[in-house]
Length: 153
Image 1 (cartoon, rainbow, N blue to C red):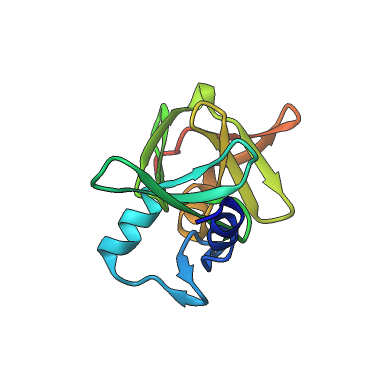
Image 2 (cartoon, one colour):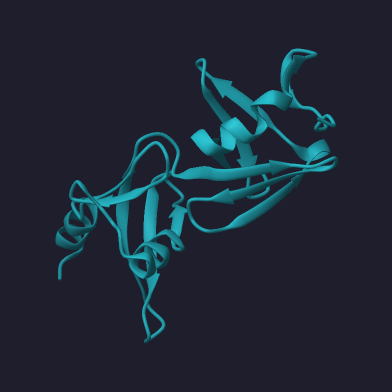
């Protein structure tokens, strides 16, 4: 297949990620857990900053397609905060731990909280459940957003 045709196929594959990090294909949610896991497990960002889904093949090659994103491709779907660490579960299935001293937060608009992940190379938006889990500990101090140590309740 000629490279232009292949590029067109990859661009028009019909994959989309919604604001909560849920994968859709041609407007329909990808519901099969194994298919969803295989596709989202290969979610990455190429050198041009575009989100792609990479799927390794048995012959060692990688098939891939672009994915349109409503916001950032990486979404924290669950979060837990302890005395020293923010724990996140991403839409990719990846579990990330970020020491509070290394945490970099950015609030976009009134509701979109982003955190730097993957050694600062990418951002993940905190989805509804993750946002709710940490919102009580969020505070504005010294010109930036911080997550405080959870208070005993």
